[in-house]
Amino acid sequence: MLTLTTKVDHADNIAGELVLPYDAREKSRLRALLASGEEVALFTVRGTVLRDGDLLRGDDGRIVRIRAAAEQVYRVSCDSARALLRCAFHLGNRHTQAQVVDAAGGQFLRIRRDSVLKDMLQGLGASVEEEEAAFEPESGAYGGGHHHGEHNPLAPVPLRQKIHRPSDPA
Image 1 (cartoon, rainbow, N blue to C red):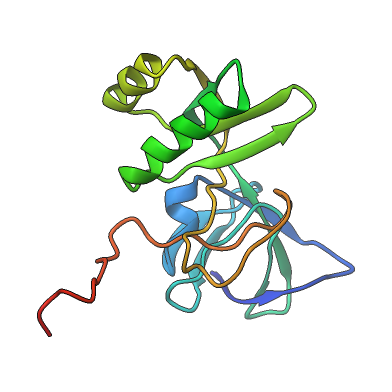
Image 2 (cartoon, rainbow, N blue to C red; image 1 turned 180 degrees about the horizontal axis):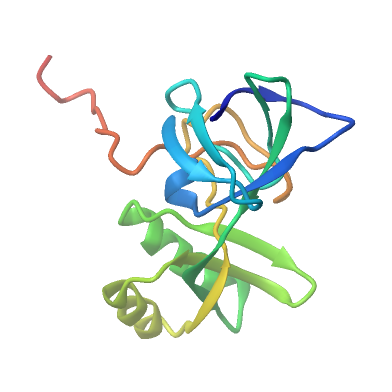
């Protein structure tokens, strides 16, 4: 079985593609199938989040490209930038991972499907549409920097990470 362990910046030859949903791209240990059907094992440094287009080197030297799988998500759009910003604020206030999209078709947010969030967003005046699309959420505020565009966003804070506050007992 091919074992993928090392992230690389570029490669002249891509031997295969590994198509994964976002939740699987957050895992540092995983068994999966390449698009060709070949079984692979994934072992990355804990905290690594794989993004669409990332390249991984296998134990035999082959390079595999990561592809973000289409997932069931909501597309959240508004009539104004202010209204979209209000929606983003309320999602962030609930520690909801969100992807900020600035595409030819306009600016919108993409989130995982959640009926409670859908109701809240519609209550704020947003249009919330179901779609199947790759999910590439923004990095957390402490995710290691910033970016300017969607091509290579930084890794988000994992869903289950405990938030430590200065007022918490030691």
